[in-house]
Length: 114
Length: 111
Image 1 (tube, rainbow over the protein chains, first blue to last red):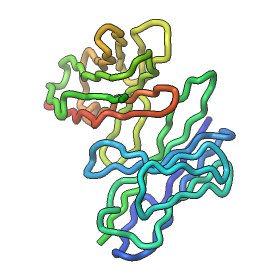
Image 2: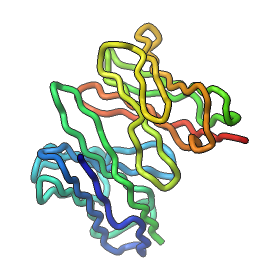
Image 3: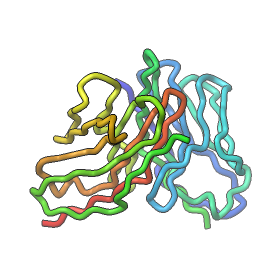
Image 4: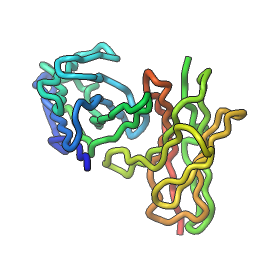
């Protein structure tokens, strides 16, 4: 069965520090991968998605970036964190079959920027 | 533009009572529809999904949802709510190109 991991689970970082959040998926090949941010326990904001290694699409311009160095690894980064980057970051994967796609989510990383 | 609306930000029900969470979508064709549940501090868990066929779909944890094309709705129901159902519920739509999520409905269950 498929499993998705995210780490760290919780992170407290000072403003201006760098960020690296990692997401890995097991048990599937060539998944679509997504990074979402959820602010204040509310709706989901799509940040990045990837359909393959090295292929990243950005949905919202900001000081975050994403990379996909391996098929089942997705990394969210920042060179300098802002206070507004605080939130709950969710990674998701999906596989499309016959045009039908379902997203499955990881446990999330809570980021607090002080 | 495509969108998903969950009209109820917060709902409170008594344990054992029935539950219905509303979801409406805006899309020209029949979308693929999903309900997810999120417990505090956790990721989203898939409850059920509709792709085609029978418009009443069964999910995990005793939940079901009904797709009504005429009303552009996909409401989530449960006949008897348990205290452990207290969580945030998200409706989502996949148009074939992109996923759209509603803003969520927070469910409180009182004893």
